[in-house]
Length: 224
Image 1 (tube, rainbow, N blue to C red):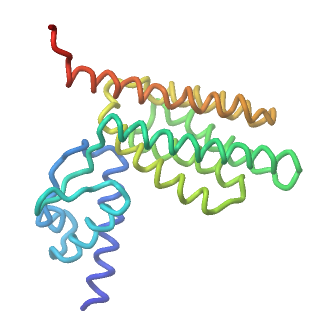
Image 2: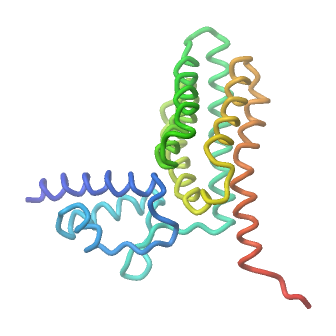
Image 3: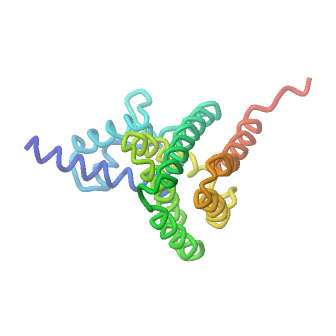
């Protein structure tokens, strides 16, 4: 029975995580164990196990005796994006070094993902496009040849996907992300790590500006 609960917990974990990363929930949305169990046709034990795993990954948080989709303050969002930036800068540096030494030619995989993104701009949901967005960034990290770097970056990217759920009605949309990716890719093709890193930083700034504005609006200064 315990093994069966573990298996069901893994299924609930994968299913609920997929919903979160496809922007089906906003930050702060309540998650009752009994509701999660009902969505996936399980008891509360597998649901509780899934929620605990997602809590460890920073996608869910416990508030008292209940769970909610994790809420991130503006200061926390800045930390997440600075961590992501540091990891992606490392990925670019190592990727450019490996490409320059002729050890691999994995840019073709990145190019294929870009082609898929271009086709998906008008044809898929934001959640599906978001999956391609993450695939693009992880493909660059994979070129670095450092699995630990790729794993840590994936955690940061998933948290960023959750944060983006609260901004998709105001951001520049898939086309803007695709155009940013094209500039990053062009810099990689040239072996220009400095420009690739600068383009990555520009890529993040839209999110930070949106949340900075939201933070200012929610905490207006006294007129006095």
